[in-house]
Image (cartoon, rainbow, N blue to C red; front, side):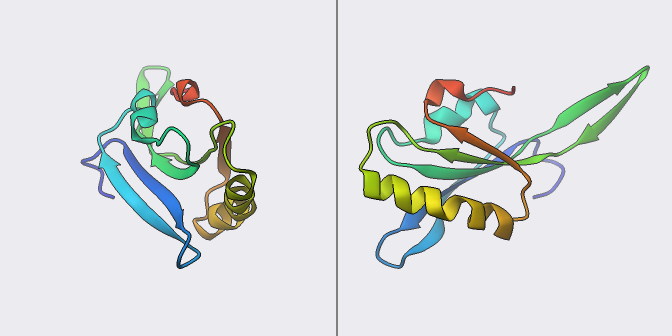
Length: 113
């Protein structure tokens, strides 16, 4: 990724013909509250998001780049589509070696917290 880019989001979807997860797009220098702009209104997506986090330690600062996995599943979608994404979520997070997992149903929930 490089340290010159503070925040990077990888938006992923399931290719229904190939039955595999593919990267839909990569966005650089994107803030957490902008992630909702990447999401389709009625289709689940996976997001791997790396962001710059500054730890305050007294007078000193330490920078880290946590990586989080977000499963976005909007309400009211086709149950079989929901099941396909939900059943793949944990395997994908494990394959990417991401321990911090979040489920989001409403795009308004995207923020730094």
